[in-house]
Length: 208
Image (cartoon, rainbow, N blue to C red; front, side, top):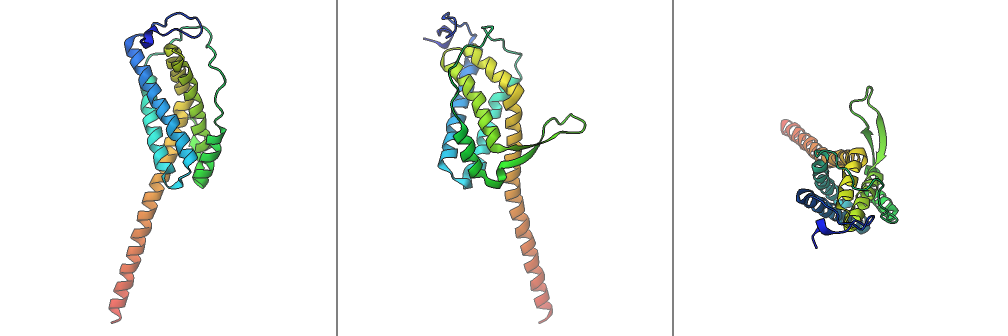
């Protein structure tokens, strides 16, 4: 049975979804599932040495899926009221494990609206934002797995524009900054040390 023939959980009627939207929904669902698995595994495994680069990769890939939703015209759900998806999963363990894993790098400051005058600086936590993103994504995934493709797309698009798109973008900038500081500060310290060694060698050569 194709996805366009699946029944809507609210009405019991076949959901008529164009093939291009069906393909988009499946692609987003696959990316969402991959992100959720990766984040859970990363938080549970507790490897602080790979946490930042792996999160950077996962957030970057997720934002590509979000951008595909963001550039589309507004999707309209079939039902006037959102069908029940059941209780959302408890994701607090992800927040706690990620927070402990990231340590001091967990907290950052984000410009909430770059067009505001003056810009509004907001203190944030990567662990909080990643958990909120996961919550928005898993909610849409529940609709998709129930065969409500249109509802899933509407939810993913709406929540991308209203919340998880900006949260993911902020997290991406924070993670990229951590990577940049780690790489560039190390290179800068190495350069300074090499310059000190060179000066010491020159002084030593001048005294002999």
